[in-house]
Image (cartoon, rainbow, N blue to C red; front, side, top):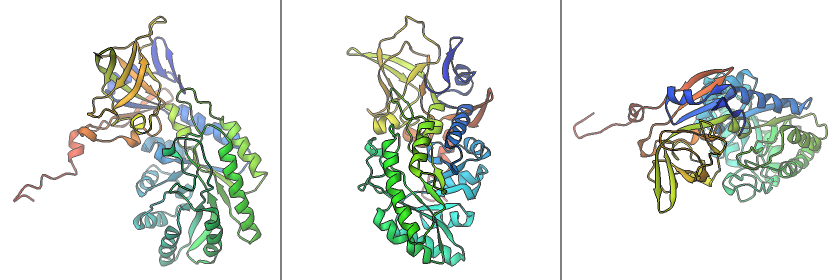
Length: 421
């Protein structure tokens, strides 16, 4: 099992909360998040950094539910955003603008202006054109934009190519020599203020070496800038620490923190970290119901009511998620291998292949490790309604997003018939 999910009294629970009654009450597909587990991880991450000055900025793209963001804000978390929509979410959830860092390669003029107006803590600038667009907006408003250049350290994170972001062939960040040339120009510009430097080399990393390699390359630039009279107040190491879905063995928070602190060698700059998946992935599950059990040419299929529209990761990059019954199987019940598939009309709509599941029509299943990049990637393909979300806290279940309705989907459309308005 992952995270706080375990069988108790014959039923799958998250913490002490049975999941089957939630499926019955709210229907399936249904996302469930254990916030107590998330809070415990947040605390462990912060504690592992000890007396190293640090700020945790949760990566909103991992899971942007407002209730989750509001609770993280109350824990003192900052936020890493990548769009104007995520900025609006964080502000609506009560997040502190001064603890927001704005990443992303394609920030529009409207997004930059909104972030300037909100007085966010830092813009993680990813290109020279973005830098000068931001500078012009800040100068016109008579303010200084706090800036960190995202450096692409050209380090191979040895992860899936779709989630690698720190190599020279990736679209993210600036080369080290480009950044070195830009910092003096930032220091001389009335609309800009250099406050930090940042990098992010990828996601779901399961070894420390790429993190430490990248940090050391960036620290060499920090030392060069310091020698030239440019002092930065923070070093942002991004996120990417892996989690366990199957048999991965990622470093612990303590080992990760120790590695970073060792490389920093007592530097006084604030260490900024952007964990997303690591905080929420193992705390979430997607509950689903088996609609049909189908046998075809020796192949067994469990056709469920969840699909790639609710959990895209398996179809997008062959992600593996544990799939378990909501009711604990008998000790000797193994079940024949089955492909767990959804009803969407695509051959890629497969949530798990060859899973030995003792389950059949009408049974409930839980797809574990679904707290990150699950609902955020959900879509209305095939005009499917996006699922409800439930957040568990201190033994209580809170409906934090109701199930979408067809009327919700139609609300922004118009028939535009001839002679109509």
